[in-house]
Amino acid sequence: QVQLVESGGGLVQAGGSLRLSCAASGLTFSKYGMAWFRQAPGNEREFAADINWSGGSTYYGDSVKGRFTISRDNAKNTVYLQMNSLKPEDTAVYFCAAALRGSPLTRADYWGQGTQVTVSS
Image (cartoon, rainbow, N blue to C red; front, side, top):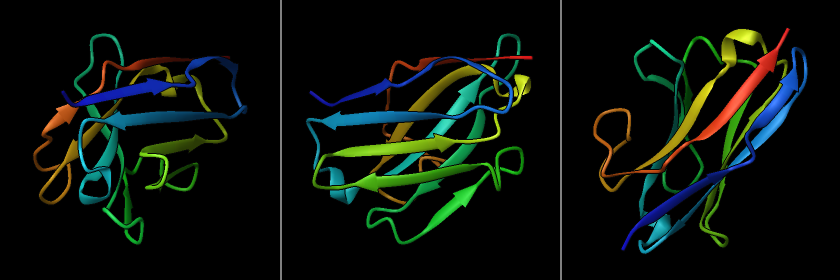
């Protein structure tokens, strides 16, 4: 079955960096658009970034633009989220998602279980 497994979350001080990974299995990874979302307690899920099947096109939410970078390695079936200049308001559970057609921002076919990111002030 399809699995998306996130890793790389943790506790970091404000201004620091983390790199999240999402390893995919059970699907033809290179055919899927991928995305990262996040959800803080009491808040709705928020879009962070997406990347098309080839990695040639990316798109970012306003709250992370200029600080986060999404990338993918189709040989490793993995999508990454490099997070720099982290702020306390970036604290959330981060999820990756996959979509066979278009972007997971529109409609995700699969979701990971999430990884916690906590940014201390």
